[in-house]
Figure 1 (cartoon, one colour):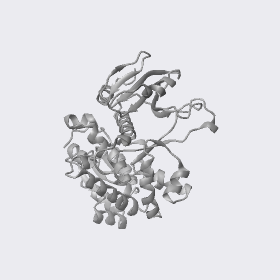
Figure 2 (cartoon, one colour):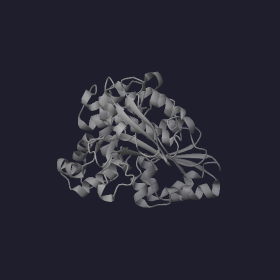
Figure 3 (cartoon, helix red, strand yellow):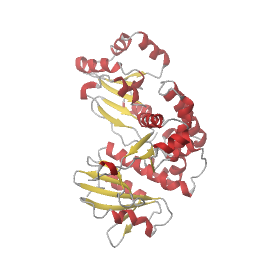
Figure 4 (cartoon, helix red, strand yellow):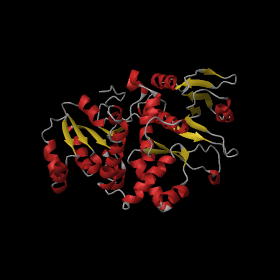
Length: 383
């Protein structure tokens, strides 16, 4: 078992994360004595559907003030009303897990009136992998725990995608047109790390543009991908740029595209960007970064100039450019030099898979992936 960075909150919390990220294993390690209710158990799920009071009766076996684990709560969001009541009347503390936020949002149910903090379980980070960490392996197969420990990562990733389609999409009836969503996924994977073009996605997937927008929302709500907005500054609305799309795991991206084996050189740039984006989100969730927002930066007057990530905390910002090449080249600094005059910018950092570290004469820092992780761990990325 991997030692995860996430520490259990002291009170009721909702733990979200895609399947295969290790939520159940982590809960078993930290809440071994808790009453466990798994809504993936079909018999229990059907019993609660037929008899809403059965959940309350089962909670009756828990001691006042003790912990209760409810796995995959999104399958029956109405249970949160009873969870709320039990917190109020018996001081029970709940560890609630979910692999989708869609039904929770759609139901508009009682989300515990602010009594539950939200946490996210991500794929394995370099700090969690320790000496097992290999950037080449991560870019080829990703770092989902269920895949990392598998004898055949490629086969496991393909099974993962099939399970997602069957248990998250089909079983939960999230889409009406399952073949359309199946066509959409590999096309969306081609946009990993790219600016989204809904019209292009629509054309290539053979579904309407409005359907593509709905499918993108499903991808986000099932926690497999995130849209990254452009930093607008004082741009006029008519100049607003489209968001970028990042999947949560490099191995997932490659499987959706039908790629196997080591990642090719032309894949690695976008895959490394996505991995760094996942790390930024992970350490933000761990509160090791100040409260901030993440954007990508691209000036209106230069369409081909951009910086991968701009982290904005109040009036302070840090710019990160990510490159997967085996050596640092002069053209890697174009975006970071263009962003230099942005108000509040405190650091410009090139994150390079080459392993090189140092700085340019004009103050751009060069960090290896490992050095970036060390700064995230120590909370020193922001000056």
